[in-house]
Image (tube, one colour):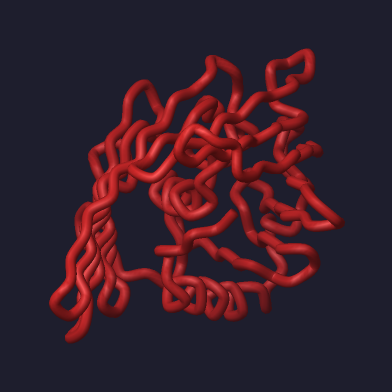
Length: 230
């Protein structure tokens, strides 16, 4: 389910910043406004993601089947522990370029041995196309992924975590709409495609998703995911 390009470095920075700020008890420990927020995504034999929020409906912790996946702290309207200049965030060898809407427009990484650049396109608040170029030693390759959506509400619609970070999660956890406002119904790439069918509650939020993966026209995998809200 994962394909991380959000590096261990940024995750470590965010966890450290959270450790420093969690020493003081403030309004973030209070209950937030009464809006619908995703609490868990569960699948398979007891696997789940659990999301916890601060009083401003921003994610402060994500657990992966009991283990902490990421902890977030905030400074003003953005994440703490990051260096931001204009629309560019730089962390080590990585660069996050944002568009004027605060969405992630490009992520790039470079070292002595390899480099990677990922560009993102959006339409109507949804991430619709991702173009990745990578190089390592004497080899290079390109990969394009495209997304189609329904017209229902994303489970993270009311989440106020900065959009650039939510879209970085969305690319990594590519099935679900962390930053996009609607839900993916098809994901197509150079080597196959994935379809997603949903069940919704009376408010239009997904409660269940069935994914099917196809390669060369043959179904090769899939899963069933269930969503709960607070």
